[in-house]
Image 1: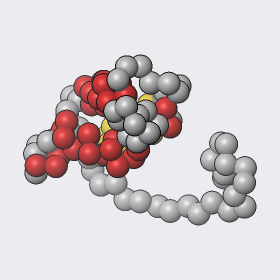
Image 2: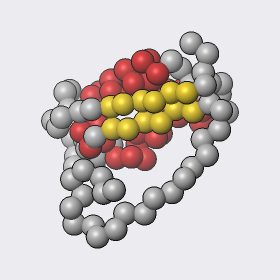
Image 3: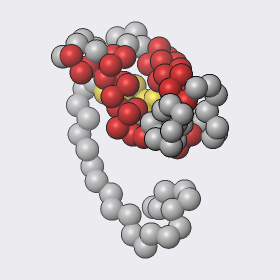
Length: 103
């Protein structure tokens, strides 16, 4: 079915994705990625969020496993607020679904 808030689209494609035995799926509202990065108009965006996750977790350096989900979420939100120069302007909701990890 159509995602909530997407009334203008007439069709929404569905795909099956095999996530394997260990995975984390991150769902978030635009409040996380629409914060500014510095004094100008540039925003964090999805690419900035992904870069931050890679830097925080060591994934960009061929590092080890992701940190615990709570730590990952806290660091993502803290980084977005820091880059924004304070609290984010929009509502923020983040959900991480984690499967197949020890602890």
